[in-house]
Amino acid sequence: MLAIQELAREDDKIVIVSPDAVAAARATKFREEFPDRVIEVGIAEQDAVDIAAGLATTGMKPVVVTYAGFLTMRACEMIRTFVAYPGLNVKFIGLNGGMLGGEREGVTHQFYEDVGILRSMPGVKILTPADGQQAYLAARAMMEQDGPCYLRLGSGREPEVFPDGTPFTFGKIREVKNYGDDVAVFASGFIMDRAIAAVEQLHAEGVNGTLVDVSTIKPIDDEGVAAVLGRCGCAVTVEDHNIYGGLGDAVCEVACRLSPCRVLRVGLQDKYPRSGKAAELLDAYGLSVADIVSAAKKAAQK
Amino acid sequence: MTEDELSRIANRLRLDVVETVHDAGDGHPGPCMSIADIMAVLFFDEMKLDASNPRWPERDRFILSKGHACPILYAALARKGYFPVEELKGLRSLGSFLQGHPDMNKIPGVDTVSGSLGNGVAIGLGMVMGCRMQGIDNHVYVIVGDGEEEEGIIWEAAMAAAKYNAGNLIVFADLNNHQSGGKVTELSSLYPVADKWNAFHWHVQEIDGHDIGQIRTAIAEAKKVTDKPSLIACKTLKGKNIPYMEDNNAWHKRVPTDEEVEIAREALRDKI
Image 1 (cartoon, rainbow over the protein chains, first blue to last red):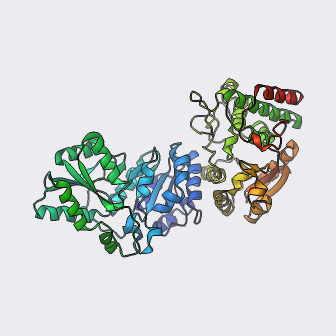
Image 2 (cartoon, helix red, strand yellow):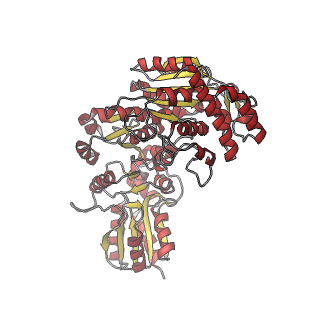
Image 3 (tube, chains in turn cyan, blue):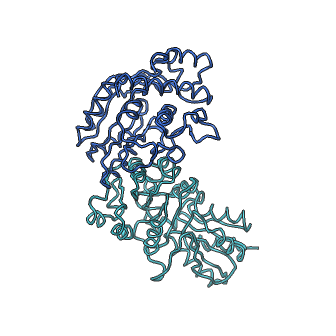
């Protein structure tokens, strides 16, 4: 929200629409500075999205922020019919994505379908930054674009994984590690630390892979992804999302179209988890470092 | 404009709907007839509009939340000069810009997408807020159906509009007591409608939705109330003024035959 707050100082059309999500969004400082620019509708996500659509028709630049699942599922149709279809300049920030985000709250507050749902809507861009600094840059990049865009955030408790000054480029993948061409690892979001640890472990065991951060899921970087697939000849995808609908689908789609090869998906294996501490939950439900390592080895088998 | 003139415009719009749906081979004529008088007052008497500048920032906004009644919206826009009347017969066909439900990008004069029911009040509230934030002094008019008020989003919006003292939001409830599946009073526990809006802290009036004088007075009264959004509950007849359509739910979505068009023309001959 810091990025949004900074931009709001230069552009008085930027407003936040909150369905009782100011605390979760850590937007209290924004509200202190701009009390008249936070529209609080109470626990009413559909209302929040529709109001944002109405605001956008008058030239305002609303940002709707709330839990990723309530935004994309409770207000799914509103996003699609009243924002995406007419191409209105409404931005969406989904909080607490994935098992990492919801963790002990349980399945009702864990969201592993949001990217998949929005991918299937024409006209909605999707950003999945890997840490807090990337999220800051992604938010700025999002606000520079015109039209609907979704930014997937976590809980705010995620580690910083990239060095200071790491760039974020809208619509482009970024190579994080390149030990070789044995296997490509495409990862996105706040499980990036696990992907990094996995690629290090693989390297130590003689499997030399390339780790890529896919921070824009839609539009997917066709050229970039296809080039890495072409070089490596096999891949795994890693995401804190169901294996259906998200990064895995996006990379497989590029592979099928431009560079056919084996792609194995690491993520939530199409089942509902449960309450648990984030790290334990990820380990228990298919997103351990060992899961990534074993999938990568399997993908690399001739 | 006199009440008689507006009444005639309303009937002209009704006949436009009959002819349009006949020519196009598709559409919802019944739901259009119950709001014709409201549409006439809004588009030809009340609203601050400029047909040569559909996106004029200072304009009043209109949302046909019960968007399936778009044939009468398109007729009003055409008669007002937003596009040629000849275009109306293209309704819902691939080569035409006249979409099956209102589309804000393809159709000049349409301020938002609508038709997926329930959303107009919330979107209208967003418009009120956006205009207010930019110092624009205008009003936003929304027409909702009674069946449509079964959608929860209506009530989310009602709550927020009251909280935000959206005095510039004026909603007409078209209470023709019909929806696709039958009588609203049989299908749901919605009625009495006015009581509910009152409970949500709106300013509420109840009128005969076919009385031009009452419609005008209600709008004037609604505009005087600046700290609350206004609901004008309109008792109406689905299919009004088209003899074979009146209170006949078979005309929710149905194409008039050549003979039926002639009957409508005859019935409205002296009323246009």
